[in-house]
Image: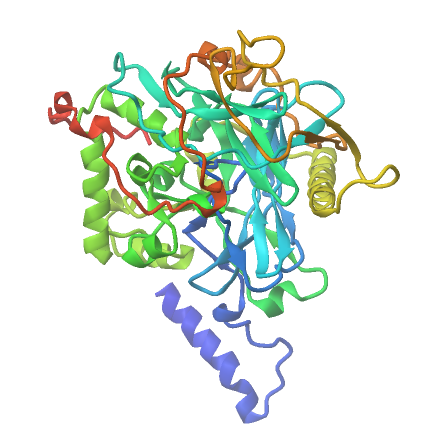
Length: 525
């Protein structure tokens, strides 16, 4: 009855001007002209990123992104100083042929890491995305080292089956050492409850490649709060003083259940990307990391380890669920918040959670089952959040300048030191020249450039606290990160950014007959 009354009143106001009556208030703006809350899109890169094993050509947008938008976070935040506000950014949507807004997020910064935000870089073909990354804080004076292109990692598959059920495979990696690349084998890592290992890898930038050392991160449910992305019409974000109030949070469990990867874009995606069209533009179901070895998904690896302990056929269920949604559109999640509410209204209460991709912040706080605690944001704290967001964006703008600037000169520009890096240093290296083209027992790949660039950067606005969330100290670095035992030397003839990644090959774990036992899937997502 309430809906009918609203419709009648709206109709009266809409037709009033036709009869010559004055109207003091204009009709409401059509919904199509307002920002639209989405329940699918890219996951904020600071919240979670796939690991690009062979840095590929990135996504290139044909047009320049709009200016960044001022965001207004909700009135509450997660309890704890470890949670920091990281503002949103524009992402290119190939299907819309337009930009969408990836909303800011509350993030528990990884211990001993600082955030380097991504940015759009202009090229001859358009605007290319340069990904952000969590960099290791080594000292009070921060610097980033830019390296020549690393050789292609030709073989990333596990060598045989894991020694036991608590092992996770960590892919091999090239290390830069004294003007040359040295090889570190892949290894089996003992999984840790409540922690996800992000392996060492490289980040492409216009100035060179940045080595991101491996680190322990938090499970998705403990990382913070993700807010739904938006599609914002041009006339809206062009308005002077336009700002965006955030209040719709993403359900992390539903996100993991409908999770995809775009390795070229260095982003995870969530929601309805089940059509074959999306594979054609490089958005894959997350389990494809097992057959397409151009990227590594630390979240999938952790989830698989966790679920296989109770469900030996968890991997099969993941694939079967994907196939069901690909074949039946009615089983797919809604694409917008408005569509979600309409569909949920037609379902019984027990089935609504099956398609609930997001909730308003007040409902999350009121939910007694919510494990994360929240507290109101005081006025002085809100000002600090605003200042921090501004500082981080300025930091990202400065990054785009120092990475796109020409060769350094003696005066002006960033402070650059040209020298061989000192980290990471493999153990057991020989002293003096190595006639057999090896450092210790580490295979060496010669490069055209024998020196790196070390650029001193401004103090990063966001740095992870050493004690971590819940005052838990992260596990120690795996010993195998510095082992130098080498059994093979991968081919390195191909440039990593030109490598074809369409091939398939079976993982040894696909033939593990010990996982044929059926079991019910649990709800830990």
